[in-house]
Image (spheres, helix red, strand yellow):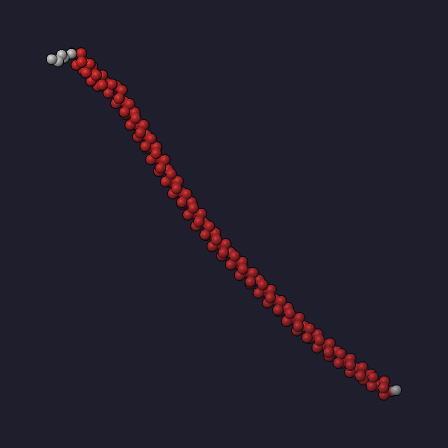
Amino acid sequence: MLDINWTFFVFVLNFFILIFILNKILFKPLLNLFKEREDTVKGSLDTAKEMSNRREESIANLKRAFSEARSKAKEIFDTFRADGLQKQRDVVAKADAEASELLEKAKVDLRAEAERARKALRAEVDKFSDEIVRKLVKA
């Protein structure tokens, strides 16, 4: 029949005792260390993802702010440009009005001067004609 060897049971008992001791001394601390490391890495990855999301949000906010600032600047520029064009039109209109006024005044002065010259010439013509008549009559 089967012969039972007690050394086999001693080896099996030694194996289980050694597994129990190694579990307490080596395996559990190593498993705990690996678990802590995994938690730390996972936490770091989560933090990195969160920071990346915040960075993307910040970039989007900056782009939106730049876009708003650009549109406000364009509105202000357009307003100033329209004001400048209106002032330019006003200055040109004022200069045209002054030039027209000066031209009218010059025309009036010219007409008055021409009329005075005509009157003076008529008076001179009358004198010359009288003198010519006298000279002709004397001759």
